Image (tube, rainbow, N blue to C red):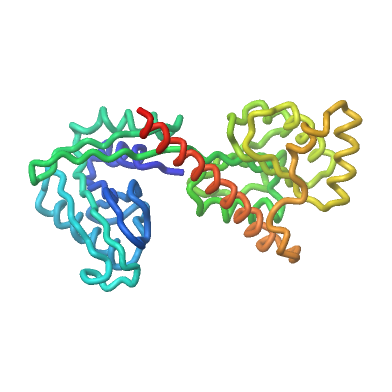
Length: 307
């Protein structure tokens, strides 16, 4: 996934002017929450703050600033109903931050935080004389997918549209598309199970290779890890029972075996079509991810109130 810091630094390297748009405050029903950002250049835009008239108007304002060569940040208030004709009914304050060479060091700091996770504090002087202070929270979502068969291809296609980074592993180089999506890294490995120790802590892992024997080998390595957010194995209740017995025969406890979820995806979907399976698995992962993000947001709020 191309993050704001990486994008803005790339634009600086290419001497392409840009405005970083940030939702600074939101109230009521709005398309996206405070801290959501996008980037606008004279010819294109990256990311989204929710689409609709709000985004179109924000792009117009950003390009007006680019045309004028504005160097100072500005903030605009948008009541979504009266001003923009949107039915959300809420309101947002949108900050427009022109990017220049003087911001390179700060953007390098931003890119480092994006990679490891944490909070980046935007602090810019506004054209009103006020100072904008806006915390942007980054919690990298990393997904590893083992298997590039029909379901694997469909799943990675869906995941490529989500705010995550995907590492895709298979032993068959020809199984991968020639041009993987932007947020997807491909690993062709003769021993896919050996890649398990490279998976970063907190990652989600999905195992759906072309071989049950290979699935088992990968899962045995995953069971040695207790620091992964989610481990899912494609299959049925029958496969789960068979694999469970094989895990137990290797000495793994019931608690350890429970780290592997099988079957995966939404249980309400019965179709075996690869695209439907992929949609169900992605939706299940997204739901679990939202719960994690909500818990961490509450933890940050409690921490801020205490300190």
